[in-house]
Each structure stands twice: as C-alpha cells, then as structure tokens.
Image (cartoon, rainbow, N blue to C red; front, side, top):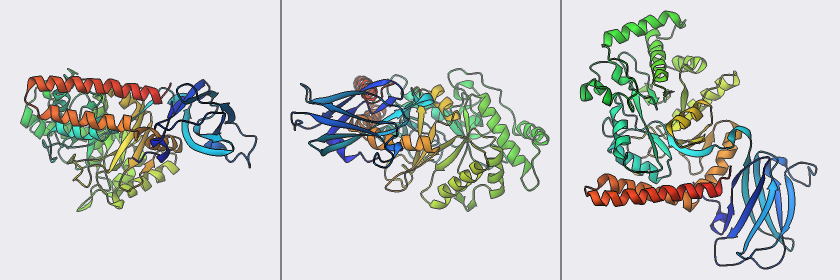
Length: 459
C-alpha cells in the first residue's frame, strides 16, 4: 500500500462519510508550516460526474469560501449527494494549494468498515513454518484485521491460535478454520469460520489421530459437534448423495458429491465453504478443468478463492477469467483473496500475494462471515508493485480509495505493525509479568486504532 503523497503534508477527516447527511469536514497541515491568513476557496468535485466545463449541470459540485481558524485548520459542511470519491481542492488567489479526497457511500455500505483479512493459511502443524500464534502476529503486523489458520486436515491449530491470545484484548479477530481433505476426494476446500471440524468427522484422519474424538478439539466454544464416523460410513453418505445431484457424464460423481457433502457440513457448522485454487499446477491443474467449470456454474460452495497461493499468472489469472465467464452468464457468488501462506515472514515469495477487503459492520466472526456471504468483498492481487483489485466495480472503486487514502495512513498501518510486533513478543515471552505488560500495551493500541478509525470513518 502506498500512501497518497499529499497526505504526508495534509490531513483531512473524516475521509469516509454517508451520502444524504450533512457532514463536517476538517483539513489541517501536518507540518509546522501554517496556512497563510485570508480567504480560501474549497472546491468540492464528485469524481464520477465528469469535468464541470463539459458537464456543467451535474450534481456533487460546490464551492465554499473559508479561512483558517485559531488552530490553523479549515472546516466546512456539505451534504454529499452521490456515492463517489470527491476531490477537495483548496485554492488561494486562483492557484491550487492541494487536492485531497473524501469518499461518500450510500445505503448498504453505510456502517460497514473496511477489514483486511485472509481465509486460508498454514502453520507448522501441517506444512507451514511457524506456530499459529506467530503466524497471527506476523499478519497483524502487515495490517490484517482478521484471519484463520486453516491447516491441512486439522482444525485444532486454529483453536490453539484463538486460545493463545484469549487473555489479550487485541484488534486481530482470529477465526476458526481448516483445509478439508477427506478420503477419495482431492479437491481442496476450506472451512472458514465453521464451529466444528469437518476433518474431525471421519475417524483415523490427522485431526482425530492427533487429538482424538473429544469435542474440545473438534468444535468451537462448545458448539454441538456431530459424532465421528468411519471412512466407510462417510463414503456411504456421499454415495447416497450422488443420485440426488444429477451429475453429468464426464464428471467424477464421487468427487463432486464429496464436495457437496463437505460444503453442506460446513454450512451445518455455520461456516463458509471456500472452493480453493483449482488452477494451482500440482503436476497438472489441481482440479480437472471440466470439474472446475461445473463447480463454477453450480456453485455448491459459499465463496470462491479467486486469488491465492502463487505468484504465477496461470493460477490467479485463469481463475479470474473463469469467474468473469460465469458472471457473463448471470452466475455470481462471493469471491475472496487468500495467501494460502506456508510462511508468514517476508522471505516467503507467497507470504503477501493476495488478501480480501471485507466491508463489515464489526470485526467479529459472525459479522465477517455474513459480509462475505453478502458479497461485500474485494479480492486484492498483490503480486505486482501496483495492486490489482477484483470484485464489483462499485466495491473496487471504494476499496481502491481505502487502500491509498486510509489503510496506508501511519496511524492505521503503524498501529497494526506495532500490535503485531507486541503480539509476537507476547508469544515468545516466558515471563508472566512481561506478558501482562505486553497485553496491556496491546489493549491500548486497540483503543488507539479504534479512535483513529472513528476519526476517519464517520457513519
């Protein structure tokens, strides 16, 4: 994320406001250089409405004369009529001093905060490199608001991550999850936020071999956990599902039915079932292409991992192209971006490849999952110096503003970096008094973060 250069010298707040309400906007100089005394003109221009010289009768344009107050700040009030970015141009004696921006949102975006998250990453309990607590700390340090540890065939590492920071009032929302692999089905799926383990439903798999069948390790916060079944009982349930699905010839019936069974169980667990990286090249495409095409047209999943896991174009690019093809046919579903990270440090080439911006009323599991289901997401491709965003045009435009004008602010990104650093120190410390001190400092950072958020986002 690159901060807009003018924001090093000028501050404008709030940056995000609702349409249709009178909002008071403040502008200040960040340095010691004051504004010259006298009158200035504030020109408000809705970016979506075209050039005033060519389209003079459009809405979202207003000029107001202001002078610096006793704090060397400007303030003005305006009822922003359209959902759009607005240029706020400060003009003195006919010359532009600076151009800043705010964004007005309407309807279903009012009250939704931008959260950066990841639905798919690994720890050393499967094929990752670090303990779940360190993974969480490292991703908070780069600005993540929520995440899930989704180890292969294991749910309990995500519970361990949650429990590790249970006594720490941190901003990061750690959500339960797992990457699901069951007998005779090689299609990768993620249980994001489910309250019980899907891997833990089948006996003699890594989840149950390592932690047994006790619900303590198979469910989240005491949620009712179905009994464990044998692999043959699982196969029987999948085979019984096949005749109900009308699967066409050329599609392996058990493979597809197993995916449907898994996604149904994830919904029973109140989670989101994610169809992951079908164009990942694992010898060949990880999923045969006709199965991918059928999955996208039928979409038995809750969300599609549009971006994730690799830096090569073939993976993410083909997934985006396939999504565009089915959208052109009137088929749509939620999309997310994930790292599928196996190392959380910058030394890993895929540690930062993609992420999701989710617009949610709260940074809480239930609200985040509901917001993903409601398609309030943008998938961010970070494989290039200038990031690429995928989603609806409306959300992409808004998310682009968020990246450049809000998330890159030092009071937002710097707060996250410090919280992540302290979380890592907390994870590594063996001294109870030091851990208490670190937890207290993290709690203060959370309060500071919320205060900064509420300064710049005014709903």
